[in-house]
Image 1 (cartoon, helix red, strand yellow):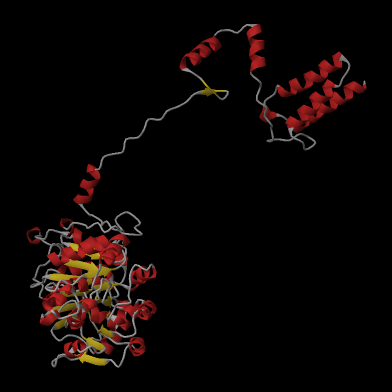
Image 2 (spheres, one colour):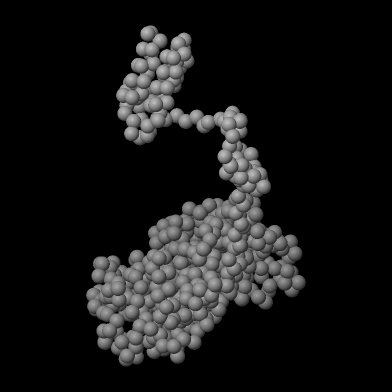
Length: 543
């Protein structure tokens, strides 16, 4: 329905359910409006229309959707050799800038990186003739609409604008009214569809305990006819934990969430598309536009935030006319939220039945064979796993290191083997330098000095040694004298008083007093002893 209007050059607002082919709905008219050298050679276009600047711009909310739209456009424009470039964060700037310098025809990107390159004058948007806003409601939820408005203001006024999304909130419609010229609103639906969900997706809801969910998921993943499965969580930590637990139970599982680097996220998606991994645990970052064939089961490990998130989650299955199964595990605390979703979408599942991993109705409803346990049998572990998919070096920016950014966490024997094979770093031997009085001491001189110290010194050598080595001055502040002054100061006062005495006998008496006071143990002295010595010294010259 969209193709005739879009090919005519009119502005279009396309609204359809997930999995109905919105990408080609705007991709084919967009590629048709681009002028490439093949058109000039065939006489369909004038040489003056050729340019190395982007002629079409597609704005998407997530990196995964950016990569998928790029692949679809490359496939559709392969015959005419249309140059399509993805621009999104998590990758190095240099390859993207180099590709822009060489020339591109279509740019597919996320708002943040597009604004960065446009602000650096690396991306020129003056020749853009077609603008596409894909998943506009998701850009609204993520707070990208102000960035989208800045990008739109950089474009020429005369252009074709197409806006596509599964839901149309009021702010998105307001954006369309401001920046679109008399758009045609097209809403597509199947005749047999009832409500907002796809009719060939069978939906189930069970009230489950949080400590029993992993057992339930392990059994659901062993249902008959199950091919690929996606498990959605609300938080990044939950997604990482569920993926790790499923790997321990024998399932080939991968994770896609915001704490992973772009290289690890693309590795998990490639492994999922190639069949090396048959279970993908992810947050809502992968719930928008990701199109993978043969996804038969979608499990909501945690209740979605609202009905729009629920629609996009279960839209990963039952695509392009195929059948699918959607299972939602509802906690007791999430019952009110689920009832609001059920009422908004008219699902006829207002009160989910209390269910555990051993409940017979769970096995019956989902076709789980009797006797299935929570661990995958070894005979059925035929997938290569996430480690079989190579991690692409993207030159990521802003990595924090460790398995969280850019490098996926490897569990089990692979991590242990990698740790064992890693060589230990040789530690440099510690070199010690002996000094005496601030000067280095050789081993021979030190040996001779120790030998000299071992022999009995004579009076002359003792006098020379006492003159050469000055005693270390110490100031004692631990205890005080009787008058509140430190003992060391009291002793100094006594010595000064003794030096002023003229009588040699009194001088000897005064000088002997401190020695006798110093002869006792330092910690056993009384505070009045220092004061009495000072008084005795002061009294001697007067006599």
